[in-house]
Amino acid sequence: MWLFTTIGFFSVVKKDGEHHLTVRARSSADLDRLRTSFMPELSATITKKGTDYPFRATINRQAFAKGMARIGESIDYHNFKDEVADRMGLERAHTYHHVWSALKRIENEPIPHAPTSKFAIKGLTYGGVVINADGKLLLREPKDHYDGYVWTFPKGKPEPGETEVEAALREVWEETGVVGSIAKRIPGEFQGSTSKTIYFLMTVERETGELDDETQSTAWVTVDEAVRRIQQTTNPIGQKRDLAVLKAASALIG
Picture 1 (cartoon, rainbow, N blue to C red):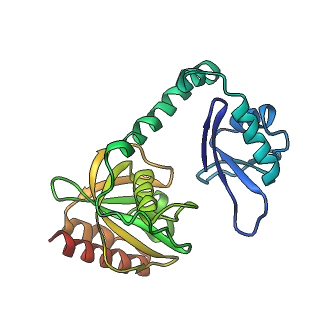
Picture 2: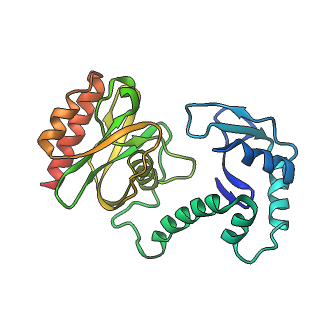
């Protein structure tokens, strides 16, 4: 669950094997405000650098539910973004506005041919092969060439409740800054060194230019150049998988 509130932004999940909920944030101050204003039962903040959310705390379900009720009872404003600006400043309000703008695509741009009812399967990862108007493909360079990957396709684990399509689109956007649209599912499941992945062929809706902290750079390349770059990967299983993905995607592109 993502929560955008007048005191901060939070991602709430239940970790495997745990009974409590984990409340994650990108700012420790957000967790402090949540604890002070609505959820005094929230644990002390845990700092975990190098992850998607560097700050987190835990809370039991009952206390979280009571805190959510308090948040609902506190709503007394007529415009959410204005209230955020008043409480947290214009910079945070502008950040929230970017998210609001991105979500407007939901109104008029349903994903074509998308199996939206097919929920992602735990244990699989999901990604995309993105093609632009010039017929070039998108590759990402993982930071510090993690696990031997020099150039590869964006992919990652689904979040709870996501469909296959939602997971693939989110991972492409987070890792490359490209907002994509599904064209087709690439047939097959592709085994890498740590996971099996389902990929979708995507077209470009827009490029944000924003990369996550796991991506060093991105590149638009021809199929031949993609082969050369993927062959730089020193992880033999990963290289074999990405070349197979490229071959399958190229067959769909024609």
